Length: 223
Image (tube, rainbow, N blue to C red; front, side, top):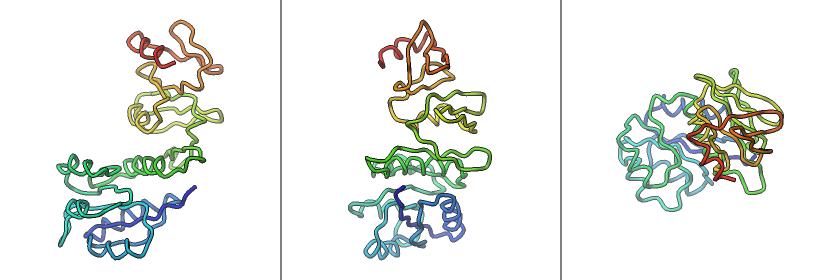
């Protein structure tokens, strides 16, 4: 997997260290520097190849938003801030995600999965990193057959294994490519893994997955 060089820009030492600690869970994230303001970060950008920046907003000298306005050909940006009201403006600068402090590891993981999808080169299989049983597990998206919701958990069924994750079906669907379609309030399937559709069921290998009346027209129109 491609190594991703990261820069953390935050005026709070504790916040910088917290993000850096999260990054250590991913072997492909390489922290190049921790900067206390945007001006200091400019020096690193001049001499280092940076792929991803974790950027705070409320900082002395120059705010993260003002810095974004001036920077050209910026790396991928994940905003990390205590202020939710700047989200809309931040996304107008094509930031990849907007994290509101305090940032949970689960929410951080979602952002890294977004980054991973952007950074995977065209010849590599897209992957997701899933937190399951206190471990990070790499899942090849191409191997996923379907996802099933079970109360506060989901079960990701691949051609090789089943993984239970504390996540909503809505969240996992946002991380998956467009060829994953929802057939039922509790199921999302890869249309490329569907063997046949019989009545109100999608057949994938030995699995029979329901199609709801509400979604049937949309499901049939996807093939």
